[in-house]
Image: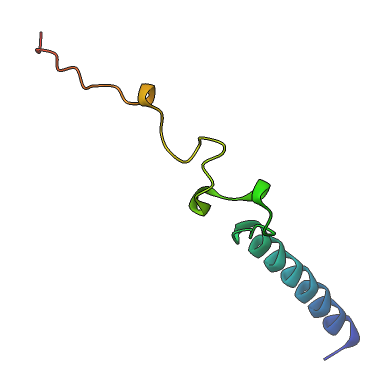
Length: 67
């Protein structure tokens, strides 16, 4: 192999490794650092009210007769 081919493979390998790292960091879940202000819905804190739907979010189904 010539030096040019090795340099091209190294550049491609570096770009591929960076791309893989970037995609993995975007799609992996983020862990909270343990403080209560960053608690998720599964923590049971119930401070923000986002864990449970409100009563007004539910709407009954209204059936209509075909015309």
